[in-house]
Length: 483
Image 1: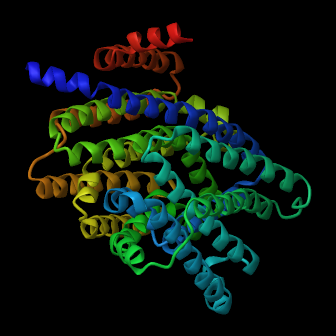
Image 2: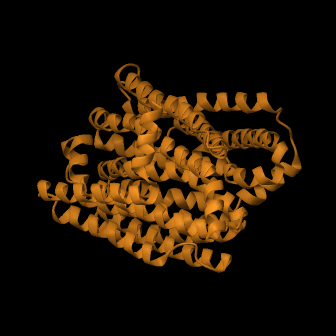
Image 3: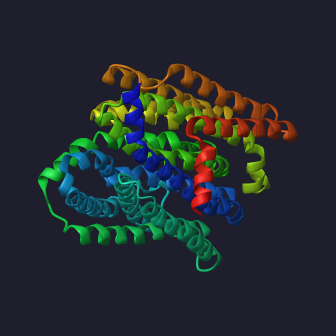
């Protein structure tokens, strides 16, 4: 016991650094996401539901293609840090060069064979070229974010993200109201693509200044061996998250795709927290796995899941009001669609706990297999359910798929590691709590007072839990004294 106390005290400083970084990511991302939330009521009024749906389809294409074009090279960054150490910056610069070569090949091929696929995508040649440059920018952005998260560099991450978010909204609005008044969809696409392309140019300068890019087979072989199995995994992740929009557009209509895309805007409230926490969870998890400190992982994984479940439950209960604040009147009847989408986001979040076990042991082939099977299941369910039940079916099929996806990775991680790093009772309790909150939100949609009373109770429960788990009051008092 005494030994454990000394170890805990010794490790308190790094632990505080992780908690501080996590809080920084969440607070900063919410300030940035506030821009996106502010933009939602603007763009749902500037664009028709059809244009909103077509833009959602464009983002789905971008989400898929950037992984293929960028070869999912960002996924090798964490392992490469331990592999190459003092040569790490040279490794990253070499990957950027490889991404640039891949982009050039795709650009040539896309223009040469445009007539063969144009009718299938429904995108003009100009938009296809914008899409390719946009994908190159996104791949470098992802690589940069993976790089800075290793050192918990919250400020670097937030700086570029804030520039992107502000430019995205500002450029889009200006274009839609001026030069793209007759083609508002083009204005929105240019507004989201141009800032990312400019940021990509800065990222190239940033890394090339630190280390001259080199063609080194050793780096490329290592990255490709690790990352290529991740490509089907990444594509499958995008299919699970957003391919529904494309299927809804094709099978039901662009207006319905617009309504479903709006559900993603509400879901992003949850996604912001999950991605922010993931920025610090992954490097912390790797450090603990490398030190074989499985007890800490299991303890904090339980807190990780339960705390997130409380947060998601609060969002679910406030969904009807969020819809009315962020959406125009034609979006107000989407609550029953948004609830399963948010619950699906919860299972998408907790799946990262077991999947990082597979990453750590470099079992990326298993990750790819599970993701492809989940994506295939989602497409099949959508194919049969969307025509029969409408766009809302996509929300429930995605929820079912994410749940099965988590179960698969949980069992696989347990087999690879030899034992579970997650407490099953906490997992069941957290999942049940989230599903119960979702059902309550739908059943009591018209009973605002009752819903918000329950929400307030959960909020106080969350504060009590945070105090018991992390000493929240002491942390706040310490911060206030310093200020």
